[in-house]
Image 1 (cartoon, rainbow, N blue to C red):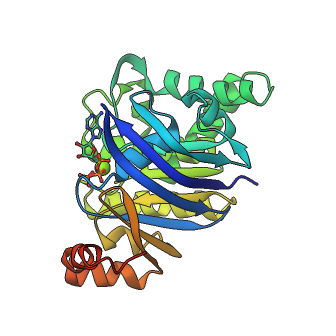
Image 2: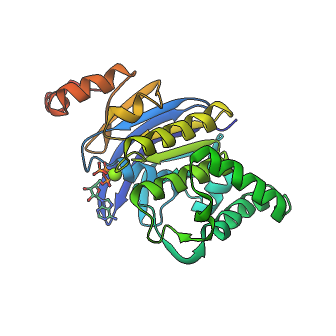
Length: 257
Ligand SMILES: Nc1ncnc2c1ncn2[C@@H]1O[C@H](COP(=O)(O)OP(=O)(O)OP(=O)(O)O)[C@@H](O)[C@H]1O
Ligand SMILES: [Mg+2]
């Protein structure tokens, strides 16, 4: 069972130090929330976990399933069972949803040494996943994310999550820009996939709304590239009430570890 271990991670983007020694441990089946003010480095951490080529790890390690993947390319990480839903999903004009999903599934199967999925099995699998995530069937023939509304893009990602059942999912602001119905669908999708497997989840969000539905056992606050506070769900309430000012004060006073 795959677990993610991040040790003393330092990451540069464009020669600037963004992450300054992050430690994080997500075990199978655990749900972790990562919160923190704008620009604190949350997306950078998510991208570093996925091996984004624009980021440079200058110190520290990322271990997945006990293996050092700090230098692995994004493909290898995906095949190892890491999944990431992006804050800003990209469109791929010219590639239909159905074609894209088949490519993704087959890439994973190939990675496991399995044969390509048959058209019949593919249809069945996708239909079931579409039903689960409330993605209308006609989406299959549309070009990926091209002209999709923000909410539709997010649903597409949860559809991929349901299809791939990764061992660890990183969800970067999967809730931003969603209406209540879409939020429920996304949360339900994540919960259904998580409860049917031992998937670990790292969910990045600014709001407690989704955290009432996808309930994290652990909450981490990232501030200026460091995790400065950790706790349980009660931390989410505190942040919602008091904002980040008190954390800023504590950091300034050197009171946080
Ligand atoms: N490729 C890059 N080049 C230069 N600076 C970058 C790059 N990527 C990230 N940064 C900087 O790193 C800092 C952290 O950005 P990041 O996107 O990780 O923040 P975040 O915590 O996800 O914020 P938000 O809550 O707004 O999504 C920001 O100051 C950002 O401008
Ligand atoms: Mg971000």
